[in-house]
Image (cartoon, rainbow, N blue to C red; front, side):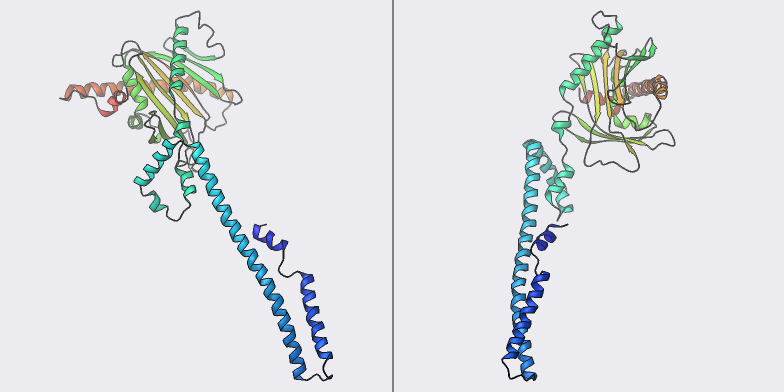
Length: 383
């Protein structure tokens, strides 16, 4: 029931009792007037009675119309006040959630675009709700990168039979145990998912090529045939975090999956380590599509430790990964996919890195400037 209906029902313009009373009054007045006449029921007498009824009915109707207009005006004022109060509450909420820096950044970007022209006539608070992404909350901070490197250090000590880290992986189940490739899995609390950790090493490709294969989105579209769409949507200049939309094929007859995630990568030459970490987020400009299945649980951390330098061949790496592909696979299927899918993915990375490194050598041999192609040079741009 709407607010206006409740108000009018609380004080009806003509209730049933009032209507009956109105007509009784008019009737009594008519008979009183007729009783003062000579008893003749001519046109003058009847006309006088009808005029009396119309006069009293008109006064009563006028009083009720005044009441109705007052109620209508009060209801309009209530709606206007509610809209103004809601707008103020929304703007106050954004002022508390987003910093002054974030709001200034959003406004500058909107003013540089045709956003306000396209959105003419639409409430401004609704427009802000669909465009603002809270980078302060969603960006990948330095602590997350540091924790990835610390985990890598533990795994490296474990490979060297360190007494200190002997029990670091006790809660993990090993699923692949090869000299240069090991993989473990661990249940994610409260879910049916598994988190995977992969350790490996290569001596025939450089850390720079291996890292570029994963960082360079344009090159991944070349070597990963499952990619449908892979684009960087936005970037936070302060932290270097990027917002990425990734759509990938899934085995037939399942729908393709799409991921919306933030990622950040760093090349630390001083400590001779390279880090790439990603995790799923929600973004108002990338809603769930009916064409794909949205993977909303996703986390990936890759750390590369060169044996000498990032340009020379030889390195160790640790990949920690989990996601929820929204598929009802039995437990044994997950284990089978881990034992076969992980080596297959690593082989693809290795082959793509070899191709990229060879492309870089060919470029250096034919270029007078002695530079790398864009895809191979991408690591150095943010190191």
